[in-house]
Length: 176
Image (tube, rainbow, N blue to C red; front, side, top):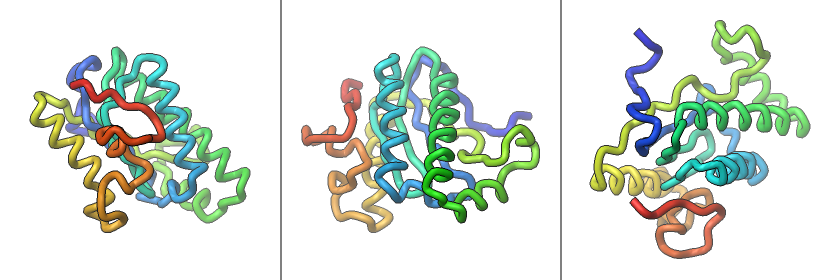
């Protein structure tokens, strides 16, 4: 049996995914760390990834994405961002977080000193427009439900503004 019951059904279909920092460590509390994620997403969209919705919170992110090679693109995203984020943490001497990423690293990860992302991304295939709407709403309501903001569009690191026609940090595909 595999590590997860969640699987990408078909690379070319939209999926809801969750990427979580190892042990839920709060890393995305600085604009610079969030920018690493946004820049990588933007790069992947230029290469064909369709980004329908996103939210970045302090220790995880949710996306609705689709591409011709979704599994490969998600692996590339996690690999690139983990290297960049670890470099940022080293450069800014964020020893406490680095120590935690080393301590909680899975034992079988013997080729590295740190593990940044939890394994997997819990992909859920978006089967119809109703499910797409539900996942996009869930993503946008996430910071509201946590009590961080009163309205979804007030959360800077989300696609909620895109869906309201407001200025946003990166573009998303709203045609679904």
